[in-house]
Image 1 (cartoon, protein in one colour):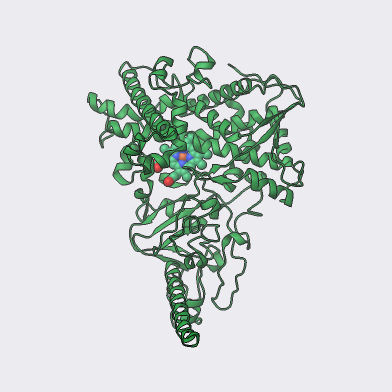
Image 2 (image 1 turned 180 degrees about the horizontal axis):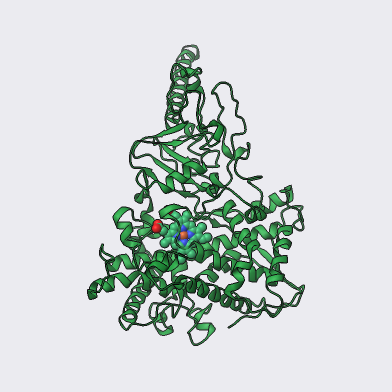
Length: 619
Ligand code: HEM
């Protein structure tokens, strides 16, 4: 009986093995197709088809730094349906590998520059941005004519763009906005010190702060919405009733503006994914999400209505808080159109839904990215005490005791800005900037000059079929490495994950925290945390001024130490090298979790009061 069963078993095993091998082969071919090498093999291509079959020339496109990235053959061998296995992990948690679809994750500065600059060949795949449409269409989620309508004449873009703003509004107008950003950031930070009781620490005394991201989120939101004309700091800053509306209206919506926007941002995925009926369930969390959603909508509609009245009454633009100024800029065109005074901007104003959509996007983009970057910067400085000391030298010089910080100080803080930049290089808030090809086209493959032209005088390039998604892998760009095992035999290169090491190409020690590199010349094209070209971030300077100010003030008053002491590590060590202890601390402090942008998990620090006096506020 058993004897007759064994041959049948063998047949089963063999056919299963055959299916498995064919499946692997099929996956391999899919993978090959997705990283098609160009030019296609020619008689002169001595390696011929065999080389092509065995090798991949994607050294210029290392893709995500995940071992399971879809630019890695291993990812293609794992069934795509397994949740959390084929999701991008770590840096790339947000992007699911799309089964059977070709995508490029571009990390070459030259290729990224083309993706950003060539608007005819590469555009934004707006479908991927649906999640950010939850409150209405807006400047981030649109493309083409639609997008131009959102970014035109009186828009926030002009309010926030340092020089071009002068073409349409009074000269120096945007500089006034940045001065306001600086002042509000100073005021908010010093207020934070008082509120958290950090002010009352004696020199040398320490205080634990378990969740720095929670603090930085509150600070950047307050910078955006704090109204310095309010009757008191409490109503305008961290007090629960804080909101662009007045206190009684806050009660009417059942939740403060800050609370509502924080809760909605945290739970945006639920809001989008769950059908409305689910909110009827008696589950406290769901009901809170719904309350926050309703309150936020009510605030935004109220805010737009009151800005509209204000504009009609002809009141000054940058009068209350920054957020109102942004909203006001957005609705200016619509009002002019309604009143028949639109001065040639053309294209039609925004609908009410679009105004709400833009209001929401400024609130989100205007605080979350900055807050997370600030939190990561504090984490990096906690880990790298030597860099903190280096930064402190600058702060002591620019902010002597009793100094009142002003916007003029901003340009005297290059080290502080370098810390922000280095943080954004290592932990870019937006880890992937998707584009798609509008036509059959090519991207440069080899970045080195001497390699740009192959034996036949033909530029080495990668074919990108029309419709292919090819996004900027910001992490790959900022930490660019060639593959660890790459063997050049004729044209053969072995493929490994870019996250596994390899030769650094654009940044010296790309995985190390070395802010001083930004004080020297660096490859501008290899640094794109704010994207570049026409679709670059319009809030770049806003966030730089804000983050430099807040970071400088915190670090001027407090030494920051990691709260987490990894096993065996009692304190961070004073060295620039990435030692094991630093790596253990980094693993804990720099960990990320899902969110709209790269979100810190938990950053616990100990603040120790400096002995060198206090900087005064202008509150
Ligand atoms: C550290 C802070 C920030 C980072 C790293 C950042 C990064 C970016 C990136 C990478 C993009 C391009 C996204 C894409 O094409 O998909 C972008 C766009 C945008 N950002 Fe930021 N941002 C920051 C702060 C801000 C602030 C403070 C504001 C507003 C006050 C803002 C408003 C916007 C808007 C409205 C867009 C869309 C621009 C367009 O598509 O025309 N951002 N940002």
